[in-house]
Image (cartoon, rainbow, N blue to C red; front, side, top):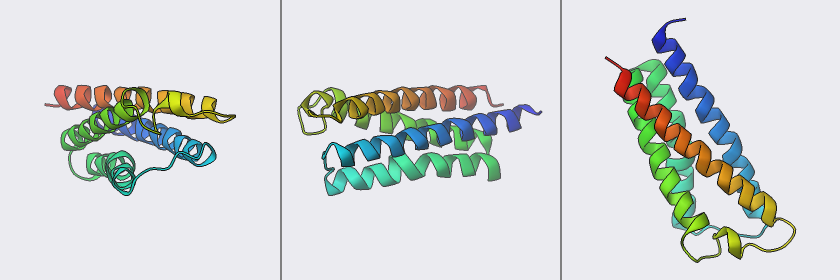
Length: 132
């Protein structure tokens, strides 16, 4: 397997795992009754969900390096957004403000999302740096 193919598949794998964790966390928002504002929802749809997939498409169709940079930027933005809302800013989205039977899935899916986004940022960055 070529290096470029391996890097593309790595980006795809991280993107699909991130998408799965994102869907789980979205479900946790519904069951825990934690609504998102319209601006938050737009950011989630465009930056958190679509941009990583577009980045993978760019890596496959155009340039691995450009796709990896776009992927890394989308994951960094997603990480900062989720980290601040779930673990720093006192809002309905702060994990410690979610109470009831669904607080565990909310917390763990938010934590997993942050971990995958950090891994995605680092993966994209490493691939971009290593590209000739």
